[in-house]
Image 1 (cartoon, rainbow, N blue to C red):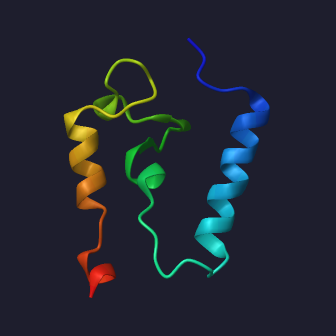
Image 2: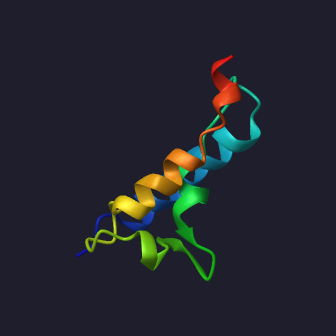
Length: 74
């Protein structure tokens, strides 16, 4: 099942790039970087995939939580 189109994925990547590099946000938590498969960056790491190839499983949710720098809230 496809959850995206090439156009939507290109837009997602452009928005993520802006968020990561613009300096506009006070801080970010990059859940994409925390959960993607380094060997296949357009996909979730298999260990974090709930099975639908879109939503993280419990281990993926933990990885997302671990990616939060609590200093952002000081």
